[in-house]
Length: 114
Length: 115
Image 1 (cartoon, rainbow over the protein chains, first blue to last red):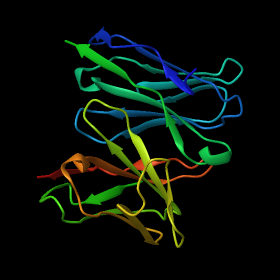
Image 2 (image 1 turned 90 degrees about the horizontal axis):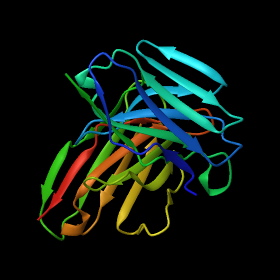
Image 3 (image 1 turned 180 degrees about the horizontal axis):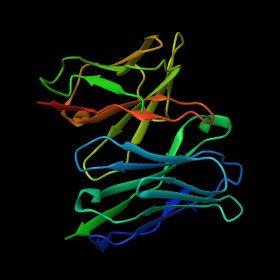
């Protein structure tokens, strides 16, 4: 089992719809979770980080964390074509050789079509 | 959000030469910086972790003598690709931050092409 897994893509949604991106992680002790967006040929850009169970909203983006289920999600409301990118779920390592390092999921490619 | 810069944004060099890439945190002090490499259509691969004032920690399989990392201050880390070869051509990205509950902010990346 991979340490961080994202729902298989690609994901295609119409403009104005809600895009739902999901991520599960294997280390139950994980505390810090991040969503990055990466456009083709560019570096990752931080969208949201979440540490506590529940929802965290920032504009059109909502991150949801359920530590009991080891599940993180990102909702994008009113999706725009400019949201088309690869979305990376990442978890900070808590101990050992992974301490402080990001472990990424494989990424989900999102396409928002007009 | 925090801003991380990289210089140069792209570089073309001849095989056998060395290339230095700079990573700067512009508006915050980063005790830890990370260097990644990404090949086309592949995931980010962590190369090394760099802490200010100490030696970098390299990931398994990364040649420390080929990829020299220096983290001389809280705002600057450099990666030098020594004796570059065409297989070193890649997108090199740094991030700054790190540590528990610290968020990593990525630089814009440096595209290296070795002829």
